[in-house]
Amino acid sequence: MWRSDQWKDYELIDCGRGEKLERWGGQMPDEVAELAKKAKFSPHTLTEEERTTVVEAARTISAQVDKALPWYKRFCCRYILGLC
Image (cartoon, rainbow, N blue to C red; front, side):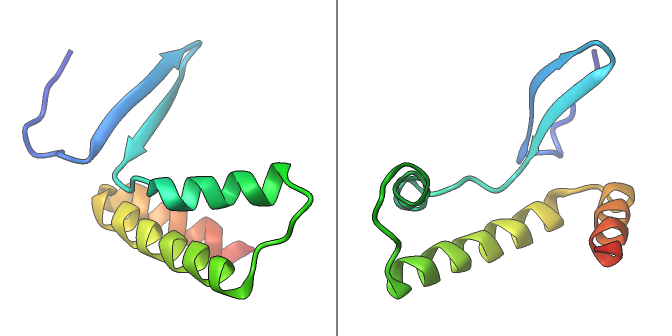
């Protein structure tokens, strides 16, 4: 197994059957996780302020992950997002 001291935000979460689940930076704040649970499991809707908080957190995490990805994975992600 290879180790790298340069990838501080990388974590191999799980692997098997030829597939890998990796984390490249971007940790979700606890407040945002609670708002996501409220939106999914509660009959209540999010207020505009809560929605803005979640959207800003998603943009911040997206930027962190984009910076943490190697150039070839960044290119693939941007290409796929461009197709949508």
